Length: 86
Image (tube, rainbow, N blue to C red):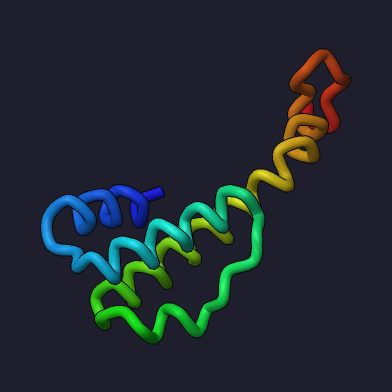
């Protein structure tokens, strides 16, 4: 996740206390698959808001592919199963 690397850099270099707290809460909610009130993102500065959107975008893409790994494994014959693709 490229956004996570940018987030780490942002938190270490220029995040305000409010933005750092909200971004950490967002990441924790995503990690735990818990609810997060998106309206809270409006309380942080624009750079932090844009970073939060990038994190959400990368998280969604990762989830999309993670859900398809078993299907991909079946297609390629991973885990001892016969391959559909020869």
